[in-house]
Image (cartoon, rainbow, N blue to C red; front, side, top):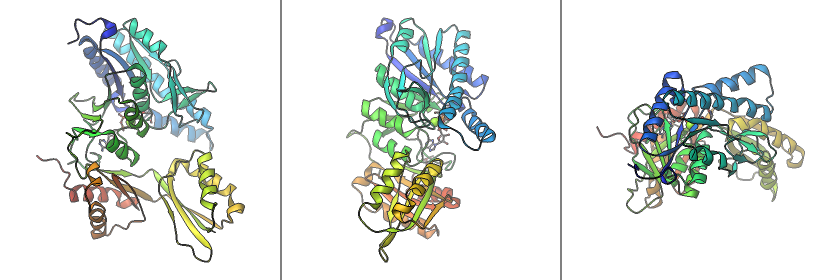
Length: 415
Ligand code: ADP
Ligand code: ASP
Ligand code: MG
């Protein structure tokens, strides 16, 4: 379709392939075949790969097996190896199809990050080597999820971070679209693994996708969606198994149907910390949350109870992975905050209802809470954004809660 263009003018697509898409030799060859077909249609392509199958989890397990403490720098060295395996194998599979390709680690690809190991942020992308490869008519294959810090250390971008690599490259290179190939055919009205009747969404706004990601819909990493919105990059989430058209994530416009509720999400990766009987005076919350922020703990929901006898309880949720850092922060403040008791609860999970139409419709929270109440599911904490309502429930009730809400809001596929 772009037959008459010179290579320099050909449209550029970034294609990112997730772990399941590259799980074994057959899958890697299938992905290489798809890249070859796209290239033969006249596009310039930059490829971003995740680690094969469960490699990242396997490496994490090994780390825990060899040591009770994993220094963050070494974790990054270890985990970044997963994506290097994929990039080299994919280049070999492409060579087999006579498609010249060249692999790059995150650092070689010019992905510069801050210094926060295991959840670094991309600061800048220096695209010279990738651009040079494109000029030489080679397909650059970039290891996702990793970069190099200002201190010249290897960093990783947090779980699911290959999505962010792909969008950052798409933005830096001015790509036409960033395609995220995964094991489901798009973004659904709920995780299809929990709700088999979930409906594929044709098109959704960055805002809704951000809320889906932030509340546990791991199909796209939150930072990748933020990045796409900030740089106006169109995302297309689609299957590497069927190659069918998937879900487009775009700027909201007036032609977009504004569903009151478009998705139900769930997240079992958070824990709740309660700090009992802290003094109820100005500055206490500031001290606590400053010290958590300094340890890069990502706090989500926060509740402070009514003061009794000059003290109050503060509860907040945070990623389970951040619990050790949070405990360290709280313990360091024990004498200043006159804290007597800190309770960690890892038996809770979050269910959320997301939809842009919520801005103009009332009754969504009432219906959500009624549905949970009618089924004896107790709510422990609530938080909201203009287009999301989240409730913390017992983890064992989570999947049931998702299915009940999905059906209460009539989100099932129409057969
Ligand atoms: P990849 O390895 O390709 O990055 P992920 O496992 O990170 O894939 O994300 C894809 C998975 O996200 C799907 O297998 C699906 O179970 C899960 N998922 C959760 N919520 C949703 C949703 N709303 N729509 C689609 N997939 C979802
Ligand atoms: N391999 C990394 C992970 O499993 C990054 C990614 O897949 O996006 O989280
Ligand atoms: Mg992913």
